[in-house]
Amino acid sequence: MILSSKGLDIKPSSTLEITAKAKQMKADGIDVVGFGAGEPDFDTPDHIKQAAIDAINEGFTKYTPASGILPLKKAICKKLEEDNNVKYEPSQIVVSNGAKHCLTNTFMAILNPEDEVIIPAPFWLSYVQMVKIADGVPIIVKASKENNYKVTVKDLEDALTKKTKAILINSPSNPTGMVYSEEELKEIADFAVKNDLFVVSDEIYEKLIYGDEKHISIASFNEDIYKKTIIINGVSKSYAMTGWRIGYSAAPEAISKIMSNIQSHASSNPNSIAQKAALAAISGDQECVKKMKVEFDKRRDYMFSRISEMPYISAIKPHGAFYVFVDLDEVLGKKYKGEVIDNASVFAKLLLDNEKVAAVPCTDFGFDTHFRLSYAISMENIEKGLDRIEDFLDNLE
Image (cartoon, rainbow, N blue to C red):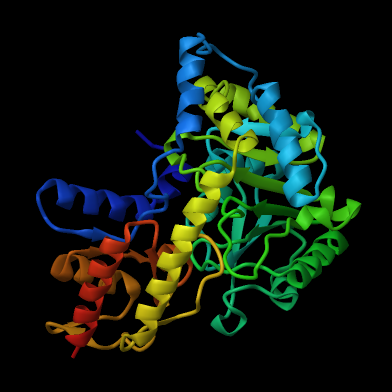
C-alpha cells in the first residue's frame, strides 16, 4: 500500500527526540543534564491553575466555539492593544491548541501549492515542516553571525521570486535569542508591503526579553503592514503553560475566518478548561511573569559567561527567549576518543554518550555548525552541565 508522499516527507522534531532520550536515560537511573528543554522549568502559577479547577467544578467541560470563547478573545484584544499597540476585534482572533497549531492554520489559510515562504535561518525547526504540510515551499535564507543571525532586506531581496507569498519573522528568536530592532522591522515591513507579501510574526517569546531590548510587533507600524501581518502568540512560554496547549493568532478578518473554518474540522475547538486558564493568565496579575524573567536573566548571564571562557566554542549573548546558540566552528575537524567531529549532530551524540549532557544540534534549524543550550533548567543543572561540556572540550584531540 502506498502511503502519503507528503506525510513521509515530514521529519520528526529533533528537539523532542533528544529531550525524550534524555528523559529515558534519567528514568534508567543515569545522571543526565538535559539542555534541550523548550519550556520553562517553573510550575504554572497558582491563580491560573485555580481558574482551571474552577472551570471543571463549574462544568465548563463542553465544546466551545471553534475559534475560542469570547471572553478570552476580548482579553487577547485588550492585551494586544495595551502591550503591542495594535487594535483587533474578537472576530480577528483565533484561539488554537498551542502556537504550533496557529502557525499550521496560518500556512494552510494563506498558501496554495508551490507558494514560497521565506524562512530566515537559523529557524525553529517546525517552520519548514509546517510550510510543507500546507503544500508550500520553504525558502531558507541564511543569516550571518556578523549580523547577529538576523536577516537583512538585501537577504530577502535575493530570495524573492514571483512565487514568494510570505516572510516568517521570529523575534525573540528560537534558537538564537536575538531580537529584531524597530529599525530592522520597519525595513522588513516596507519590503513586505512593497512586494505584496504576508508577514507571519511569531512573537511567542515576547515577554522574555532582557536588558534594554524591547519587543515591537511589526503590525504596529502602519495600516499597510497591519493588513499583511498574522501575529502568532500564546501562553506557553510566558506563563509556564506549555502542556495546556493554548496559542492564538491575530490577523485580517478574512484570514482568521479561514483559519477558524480549518480548525473547526481539524480539532473542533481548543480545550475548554485550558481556555479558562489562559484567560486568567492573560488578564490576571503579571507578577509571575516578571519573577520568571528575573531568574531566566540570571541564568542567561551565567551561561553566557561560562561559554565565553571555554575553549573552541563561542556565542553571542542572547537578548530574549531562554536559549544560547553556540558556535562550533573551532571544534569541527577535531577528534574525541579518535572520532572526528564534523558537524553538530556528531558533537551532540558524543557529548550525550560520554558526558551525559543532552544538547540540541541545530542541523534541523538550518545551522549544522551550531548547537542550542536551554537555560530553562535549574541553575544547579546548568552549572553541572557546563562543567561537563568544559571537560569534554578539554579532552578534544
